[in-house]
Amino acid sequence: MKRIAVLTSGGDSPGMNAAVRAVVRKAIYHDCKVFGVYRGYAGMMDGDIKELNLGSVGDIIHRGGTMLYTARSEEFKTKEGQLKAVENLKKHEIEGVVVIGGDGSYKGAQKLSEHGIATIGAPGTIDNDIPGTDFTIGFDTSLNTIIHSIDKIRDTASSHERTYVIEVMGRHAGDLALWSGLAAGAETIMLPEVEYNMEEIIDRLERGAKRGKKHSIIVVAEGIGSGVEIGETIQKQMNIETRVTVLGHIQRGGSPTGFDRVLASRLGAHAVDLLLKGKSGLAVGIENNQLCSTSFDEIFSKPHEIDTKMYELSSQLSI
Ligand code: ATP
Image (cartoon, protein in one colour):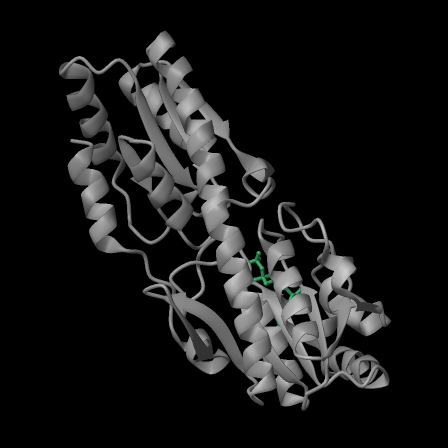
């Protein structure tokens, strides 16, 4: 394995740049040539592929987003699209690819490995929703962005004695809502993985109000529905002033935290090690702070699970 490519795909996440840097530098350290595929699988089909050197990835470890750009491509889901992409890789004599992205990107990576290109995935998504790793690259940064936002909202919530509903990202996975809700002391956390009962939520808010609580914070993962509608329901049923903040894309950007930079560096380098050992069809991860790898098949067969003990704890601490 002497020629390796790297790409970022799907939603961007802070730390992707640190992962790209690690892939490039680790591969060059082992005397490989490295190529950047720009705009994910779309760029792979268009032949948007350039050789990278040590300097190409200088000054990016601290930057959010991805220097390789990212894209979603419907065409790559077709066999014709995949063969076009493989042909472009072959033109550059690329034998192995590191795909940094979410589970959709892993599906594309698996197709590449089936077409004979050695492929290793690295989990780049803020959602923390990929089996086979305790943490995904970008989750910690996003979590901290949300916590800082909730802390600020808490100041105004307590000054005005209001209830705030804060909608955070997570269409299918509630990790950002659960971790941020626990870390920011939210009274209620609503996740796609746990059915909610509006009456119970109102009861909890009323109990809080009775014991003199001046404000409440409710963290809602976008996957359970609209934060605006939940805010309106609470306002109507309790007759209390309620405000809603949808945090939106600020959750994706920003300089990666130390944790994400270290995670991205370790995972990017591990992906290169696996390619050099002749492996393919695997994704790298971290479990109990140890590097590991899991086959794409196993990842696709496991549903993402929420830490139910942590969810129970958040309820116990916000009685
Ligand atoms: P995020 O978790 O941030 O949404 P993701 O990697 O899951 O990231 P997707 O849009 O699901 O993002 O996937 C990224 C790209 O991977 C798609 O646009 C498509 O090009 C490719 N891809 C997804 N599913 C498949 C598939 N079944 N076969 C081939 N390629 C796929």
